[in-house]
Length: 460
Image (cartoon, rainbow, N blue to C red; front, side):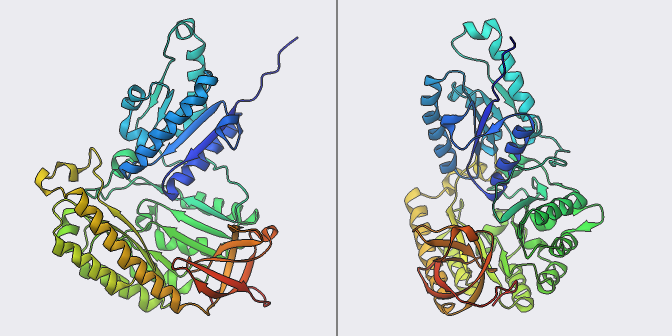
């Protein structure tokens, strides 16, 4: 009698940015196509993949701790495969296999297309007599960067969420001195615009009404004669799509053509993430950001003139090597001048292989000073955010219900301007729109009440 082979089960756990979340969905799609059953916890899985970020040292430390924790499961089930994928895997490479010998696989972002085949290859090696006799099982490293790999033709495995991430670009050509991305994801590679539009149409047909276009510098996108403004405009016109967002743009590519599309296409949300990184020109130059504070402020004025209700967010790094206290104060001045609705704030984290790590050692800023600057930046940023949001109490907003709230009987959603709102509602309405009045704010999140009028697709 022939034994029926039990399907392999896989679990993917993702850390990091929206691109990593999208990559996690992509890996799940590859595994499902390869015959794997996707499960929701490592305890159920034969293969556990930790999809990683390498932007900050803290993120890598967290992953190493998590992998060590998973080794406890592996001691109980030695046949379990532990893999580390993504940017951290690409950065650390085979050293990760040496530092964590219980890891079976490291795979960089350009290896996902062959993920199922790689796991089969690993299984074959494990079955070999020599491997069974050894104390340490076979390990594999898939770390080649491919100039042509843009994930064309690969499908993501998405859940039932009412929103979807659409990767349109991989890698980056900018090479900012603090950033590891070009070294772990390679140069910029853009997907076919026709494939992107096909994916959006398919999502709309399935009931998704909000999409976010993803890229490392998403607005530098170019495919054939398609520019990013053209692609954004066409995506916004897909039947069934009510909201379009994009992240993360580079300030240099915020063009009049892009701003015109944002102003004229009703489905493009009144929201823009504009990573400033610093408010001082000398620091920006040493970061290789390729713009000045003055040109950044011109972009802000351009956008706010065309889209007066725009909500702006940003990224800021403090304590970049050589940053003086005066230069840090310039960053605080920029925050007060622009008044971003939200800010993602960090202190500089050295990444091996990036140009900034080769700066003179005496330029690196004491950890206590760096932490104090970060704390002050956060205080200023939260103060501005609180003032902006307090002034918006009383607005009537169109909210897309995304998930259950923290407390029973509550739901959570976002406005077109990316403001998070919690209100009383039924989780059965996830994916639906509600008209909500904003009644109070905790600083970052609003509490509201639904009003009995038909939901609209435009902003209040």
